[in-house]
Length: 257
Image (cartoon, rainbow, N blue to C red; front, side, top):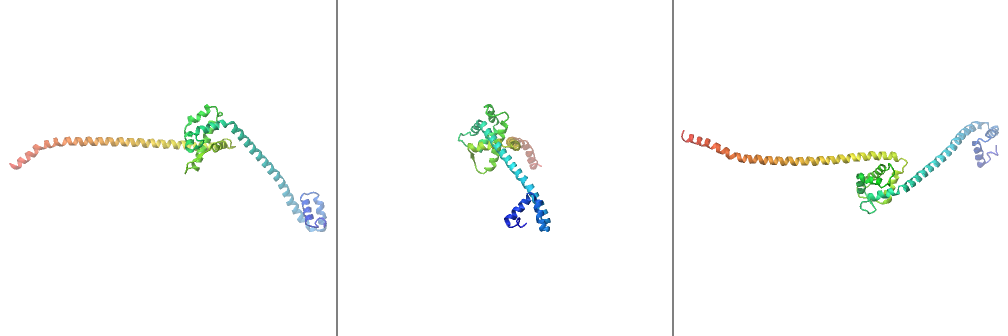
């Protein structure tokens, strides 16, 4: 027993060998022959140490396996993104040129908005055979998402984006592992934006129509007022001529009662 617990290092090694449960009963029995009261301590120690060892070792392997899988998934996503960028490089070049209407190699918020509202112009990407089948709507939603987010971020001051920023944002949306979920939300936002734009346009048309109706009503009222005034001026002399005999008869009756 003294050899097993002679100093701190030897004691730690003895407790570690007990924790591994390698021939632990023989070691414990040797100690209990000298210190029977240590029975309860060794039972508790073996129980806690064994539970800890059995839990810690699988946890380490599980963590390593999960980390390896995450690295592999990130590598696959990165590889897929690089392949996607290479495959659609021509499409991004055409989209940038189409958006950059003033040809200054910078994209403004207004230029993006004009392209988003011009669906026939966006459709020319498909005619130029730079888009895969079914990609047009996805690209339109990605462009709208870029414009919508930037309009909130740079609402107070105008901002322009270079080719790298423009391409990176569009590609990040198109190559995201959750692209379907993200683009579903973007489609809902675009639908709300289109409806609000149409409502504003209809409201403006209604106000313009009401203003025209008001102007026409005022014009007709002015014409009617002028006609009534003109008719009143013509009717007054005739009424005075009709009243002259009556007034003359009244004066005569006063002079010759």
